[in-house]
Amino acid sequence: MSLPANFDPRTVPFQVDTSGLPPVAPERLAKNALIDRFARSRDWVPEYRHEPRMSDRSLTPASVLIGLVMRDRPTVLLTQRTAHLSSHSGQVAFPGGKADADDAGPVATALREAQEEVGLSAEFVTVLGSLPNYTTGSQFVITPVVGLLHPELELSANAFEVESIFEVPLDFLMNPAHHRHHFMATPAGERQWLSMPYHDGTAERYIWGATAGLLRNLYQFLSL
Image (cartoon, rainbow, N blue to C red; front, side):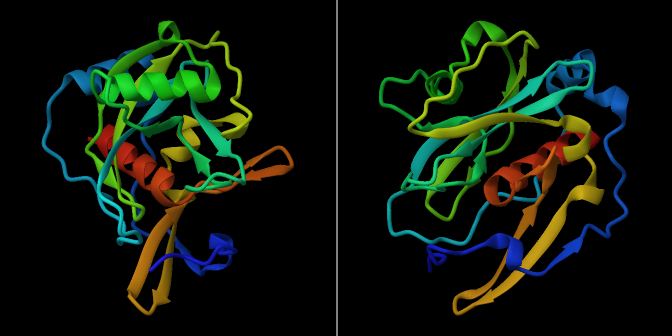
């Protein structure tokens, strides 16, 4: 079952996270702490791994870059996709896309897509590692590659794919008080997802679906 073309997730009822989970401590969001966390192995189970299937297509490998910009207040690099795209049009997303046959692996896919979509050169990226894969309803198996981005990075949006590039403070996204849990009944059963709306001046950056799910998994990972 696919969602209607004019579906607006903002209209679906939600509950603000009532779990009482604390935000990630600020010191854990600093550069050296992030490097240390990815260097440590520790068993954990991500909260979001699969969406209900909404496509008959075969599973397709893909990667995204969760880019953490190391400003005085670290931020997360995100894009608003253009409205005409066939997949996830108009949504907030990480730079990324499906793997090419000649990509050396998931990291290479994430870096190539980031360069193609937002003009991010690999020289501005320090790859820390990857989070567990996430399968979307459209049957993309996403490897989330996490990297530190130099604050003097230079970006240029690919106008065909990206309407705008923006950043959201990492501490905002790593606070469960900003995580909304949505529930919707459908003929195929109940669907659930997260949203993390962020007001960027007068604009609302509506982060939801796979992007929000990956950020929630990052929250869990950094909380350990």
